[in-house]
Image 1 (tube, rainbow, N blue to C red):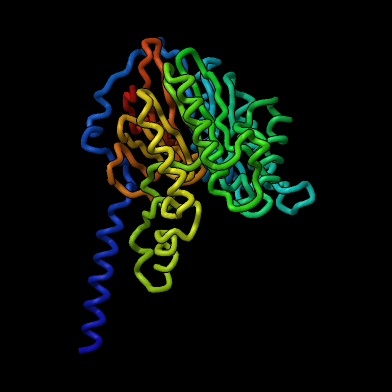
Image 2: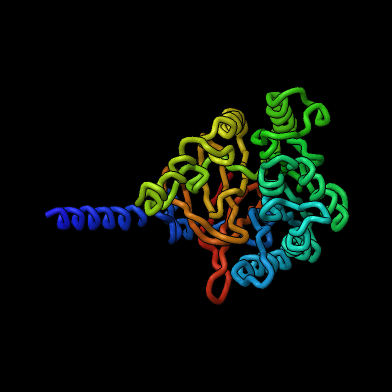
Length: 373
């Protein structure tokens, strides 16, 4: 009797895990308003005024590993076709796992190789390139993070020239860059408000964290007539692990469930459940609706997502190198657990569209497109 009962429990558990695991966005998931996305036709390519490529979490290209090649090869081909009227933004986690260590560190050569992949793509690109730091670039959010991010900045600017690493000196920003007439980027270092260890403050011209958000508001107000592209590493909305979403197989056992439950309860500042992250995202969500045409683009999650909240467009493009769990729905317009990147196209009539591109078996595939403004 006891054996039969155990079997029944195991069967129900397995069925539940399989059913709930199907909630993963292994195939592109489209919200109700996005199901017919392919029928939305933008102006012709000859009317593109500027293109912005958004790719995050691309710093894990290991020696002898082919798994990341398709997405980065696709990116390079698209960049070659884009020409000079375009911008490439690397959305953080440019070097896994601990950013750029000191020259005598045993991991230095591997770190240089990983950032070298992104550097080679950037050097061949005719447009302008910008790197934004993520938590891995800050020594995986550990002590010494400020030094690590300054080392990376110096290394990149030696290779590509000044002002490619934004914001600079480990400051939170905002750094304002006019990408094209009518299109302004406002870059943030979102690890700064989450970082518990040494970081600059007075050196950045602010006295506390609130000063950072007030400076952001001032910059947005100054350029509010433009389309505003705010870029950072950490997203405000997400269907991924950092938003507390995990495949249900993680909850199958007492031991395996500790990890996702701990993160859901705010164990890590890198997760939206943590008080530091909540404060960061709540500030952004309170500021952004005041602007008619604002896009917030981030990485951090190894997936591709589009959200629309209170008139603000939220993009997650952190699948430059790898993918990880991403759930369906939950208010998103689009979600997909897959490698790839996003393109923003601003047209001469000031329309702004987003495209999501992924490597297919034999060619590039556009899996989603939407008019943002």
